[in-house]
Image 1 (cartoon, rainbow, N blue to C red):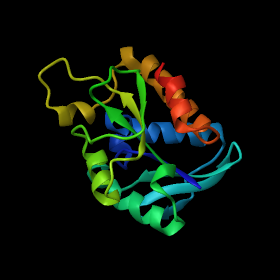
Image 2 (cartoon, one colour):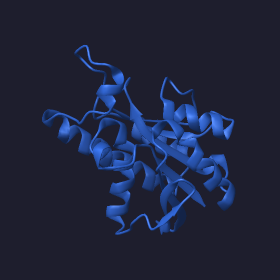
Image 3 (cartoon, one colour):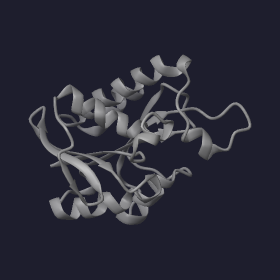
Length: 186
């Protein structure tokens, strides 16, 4: 079984913010396959489904971003999911808005959701899909920027990146991640 976790913050207030783009990818996958997050446990909302012939858990932690590992770790332990079978989707300030990058492993790069997952899993070796949200161009604190919505002129690029990330997730269910990474990072 594989696990795809999208990072974000729960609640209407955060729904359309840059920090919630991980949730947006999970929501896109749910929509494509006519599914919903029908389980509420491990400090998260999730679904266990079969997509493209592979059993997969789609998870949206309800812990708030900075505590994402508190949801993922117990879910992995309960369902006996190996770290090699986990894919984490999240926003990245260092990638331009609309761009998508896949990685096999890495540090947290200042991202508190990823820091929490590394702390709870005890490893940096998990697959990631990073969606670019760019950096603020005006003197706005980073926390206010990531908790802000995408401006109208970025909406098309954001939607395309969500589609691309969801495509990559679906391909990973039937292919080696390295192969998917080579295709989508090209």
